[in-house]
Image 1 (cartoon, rainbow, N blue to C red):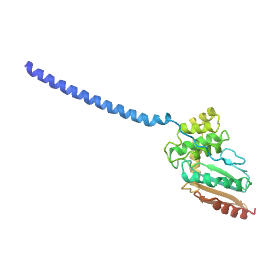
Image 2 (image 1 turned 180 degrees about the horizontal axis):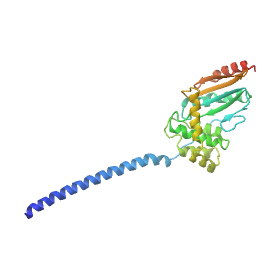
Image 3 (image 1 turned 180 degrees about the vertical axis):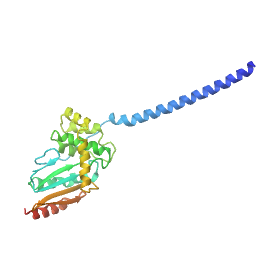
Image 4 (image 1 turned 30 degrees about the horizontal axis):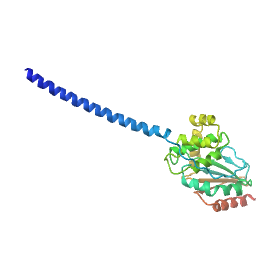
Length: 246
């Protein structure tokens, strides 16, 4: 009887130890998983910001927030863009300066930059909100240019919150004001509205441009899609000016 009980106790002890090892193994796996998940979310806030590329300087007249030029110009061009879109960067680097020099600086075109929501992804929204926050300090275009200058891909960490703050510091923003704006999501609804406005114009890709002007009381609209060369904008603008009689 005693020997039988001893065997049962040994079996129970063996089972208990096996269950304990199993629990410890499970707890270990859960802990490792939790650490990995935490690492994914926390690491971007601690990894080095990295080198920040300096943008080419574009001289823009009469800047106000996300606009350039005379609001009373006969032609208005709205750009719908995404800071993560490589073709939007091409327009910024290859065409925008020529457009500003030839038509905005001469009072013929009033130019507006609009984001396009989260068209490419979450970093699209973050970068757009950061640019609009910079606009509150009348440095939208400086932020616009440094964001594009540091574009290397889509949703790969180019525009983490830390990097966007580093851009803001680089262009000389008041960081207390910028952080207050950015952290509060002050311009989140404006970014949403940009997307709604773009869809209302039936925009499906970035960059896209909506040119509007008035002839004999009638408002006319022309859509220009893609990172077109300056010559394409020139032909459309000149045709509109001829209709207007300028």
